[in-house]
Image (cartoon, rainbow, N blue to C red; front, top):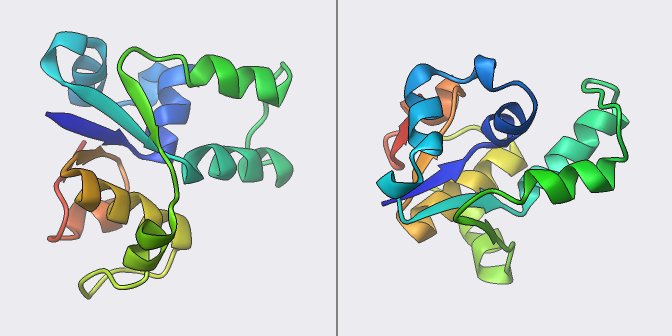
Length: 132
């Protein structure tokens, strides 16, 4: 079993786990319950954009925060390779046009992973497994 962390799930796990659902907290905490945790390479970029736009604040060096936040058991970052980039643009309809969400969904589809997300648009999308 593989779980892909949506960007907010990854950030909250590392910053404020109380914002996660009980189910997601239990899933991430129980490293014996999954083979891998996945994170799209777009998520650290989204985190950085939140900092840039001042929609998120941290009290340490952002590069240090990212390094620590990536040091999770069984975590593998999924690179954004050219074919995945293409596949993110041809997802089965209907799906919304947020590029980062498209990349995250395409990554989950490619990896046959369940997305851990609070995002209602992803939760409602029938072409990928997700839960909160």
